[in-house]
Image (tube, rainbow, N blue to C red; front, top):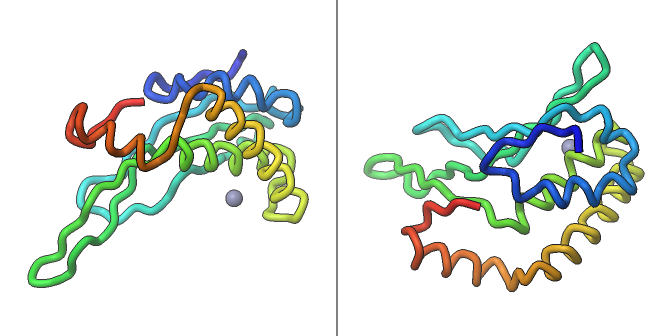
Length: 147
Ligand SMILES: [Zn+2]
């Protein structure tokens, strides 16, 4: 595996390895970085892929988003932590961009194929549901989960 993965995203390694079978251009992916939403700023982005003129790619993923919870009397932002299902769906979407840069039907088909592989592996790894993931996280450390 030549992709350098951020420490908090290391659990994705086996999924990236799995993707190699259907995404040959994964060889051009240099790293998967972790981005955090800026404090007090709305963020609904899940991930992004940047293509460099030299021909390689860098992916960034978010583990959380900031949404407006309440506007009055004072705006309040709430941080939501993405589930593993969410993060793997984002990984499938961004990896599919390595082969199909635009949002073409071919991109969506590859994304679906990757999602199938990832969800099968996630189930195999014992994952039950997002509801289960969130309730475990609340009891363990007040919803500031690590992955
Ligand atoms: Zn996209």
